Length: 180
Ligand SMILES: C[S@@+](CC[C@H](N)C(=O)[O-])C[C@H]1O[C@@H](n2cnc3c(N)ncnc32)[C@H](O)[C@@H]1O
Image (tube, rainbow, N blue to C red; front, side, top):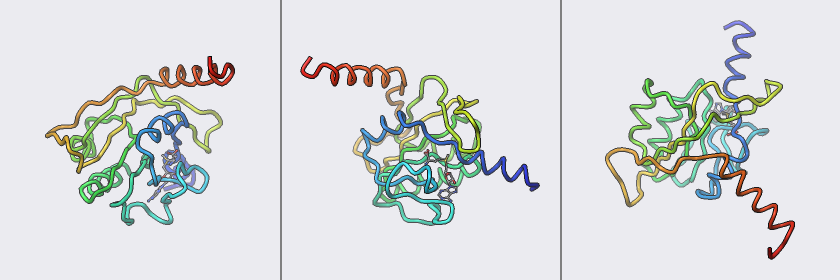
């Protein structure tokens, strides 16, 4: 690979989850590790990096947040599925690509899929502005040992930034007028 291509493929791995979306999921799951991160973009105190790779680490006792590097979605989704068989809960933010191997081999064995309304705005340290993804994203949840196991993934509640914004606004108003 030539210099610019290396930079581009590297940059393409660094699309960061917007805070609102992580906040919504973390409220519910209480993550104890971010499986794909750098020192700069980690969402949890405990995280794995390219150097201390998530792919060769044990996740079995963890509740993991995963926004995988886009150049390695397949191995990360394989790892997420297998870790769930061993006891982990893994919540993945990934592009919906229903024509891929990772979709059929792993996502279709997930416990729940939640669609996200509108495109997600990802930030990237290699780009000047945050930009709306050029593809739709989805949250795929692996929780193999949950009690309500079904053959196919459940379609969960749609994730909508508008609901989060309204909630934020309501909290601001309450803080401005405590007890109101
Ligand atoms: C899409 S970004 C997600 C960043 C951040 N965790 C977030 O959600 O905003 C994927 C990250 O995984 C890192 N990464 C690449 N290979 C990895 C590996 N084998 N193990 C852990 N992290 C890796 C990349 O450097 C990049 O920072």
